[in-house]
Length: 589
View 1 (cartoon, rainbow, N blue to C red):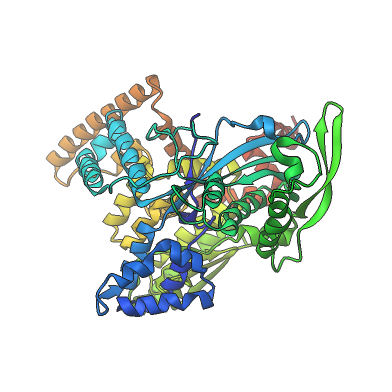
View 2: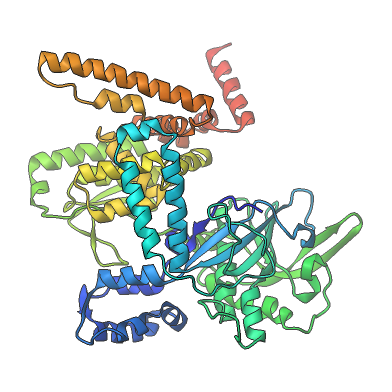
């Protein structure tokens, strides 16, 4: 059973973040090991759960250091990120237990999702697999090799270093359910499944058929003899809360969903539509534990878990059952999605140069351009200094909802403004298909992602700004800011056009010849990729360039305001036909 894709939830700002790391980020920049331990021991009074502190093993790490050993905040957070297991969300392309679902009607979409604990060793295995793929891919990517001949050597060195660092395998847990699922990167059986869920969407309903942790269940029954201890699995509220809140978040991301519900208990186990109590604790789990978790997540929205009727069954065997759930109101949706501010993490310096009349004029002109690009709904504010609330560090810019703020202390406020302007466009102006295309094109490991990193280095960006490119949305924001200043050619042809050919007459002649030869090689490479089905990256780069041009010209915000323009950009053939009909009517044809 192949796994089509995965994402790391606690490395994704849109999903889950470590509260422990967030709180430490607001602390002083340096302290002794003993002082850090005392600080962390007091964090449960500030919202950090004891279980997260225990799972991280950070106190044991600090106690093993000399009391007067100095640690910077950054070093401590880096250690936590490296040693705290990450949570991998794996949706299965081919469900194993679809026959165990409750029938919800003809338009039901069923899905099974695994939640996997990745140890530091697992994370290195993933990184090794990705590097292996990228090294093999270089053999088919003449364009990338021509642009960066040292890439293969660098990747090989990284690969060797990771293999040397890889720790000895720890004892893993292999669950009976989904035990045959293979990871497409390592081609080994998936292990350390913290829990799984089976869910369906049907019309406006998001329904949970099951939330379960074999690992936790077996460990509890056997008093953890022979079953490895691990984060989350030792506490029912921890593993079930993570999975339930994630499903609530996924439902909130779907604008069609207005109801969220789950099974009543043991009487609905494995697709049944009965209501009799099971007597084995499952009823308490679904009717007591999950409602408490959901109500806590819904706090402040005015919405709470209640019982409402859902019709189940088909082929004459239908039944209406009162099940627990809640209504996905606008307030609930907003709370569950919890969009975090997006930051431009660039070099911060002295604000004096940007107080001159000339610099003020440049920024004022840029604000006018941004409003022409983004529309009148956006607010743009210049600030003396901006602070990341999570870390206490100064940042170059940030975008929250329809507000863009830019720090006058940024190395390049214009670039920061365009970076945050892209985040606004991504959220409010791009269509769903364009957003997906952008995130594919700028994903880690792609040519565009690597080009953005190289361009940031050449432009003197901060290491934090470069590391942001691990997130495709951040990489695309940096990409747009660089591209709009002429610092990032997107296509091979654009890169050739930007190459210098020299100053003297001979330089220009020789340079022109080499550019023609290079262009011929690029065209040959493009042809080879087309005949071997390797031209996907070329197509995506051109699509990115089209989207960037549409934003710069103001076309995207015009589409967002004009429903007929939106029809022209829609992937829906019905909406495209409506646009064509409107155009014919307007032109009198």
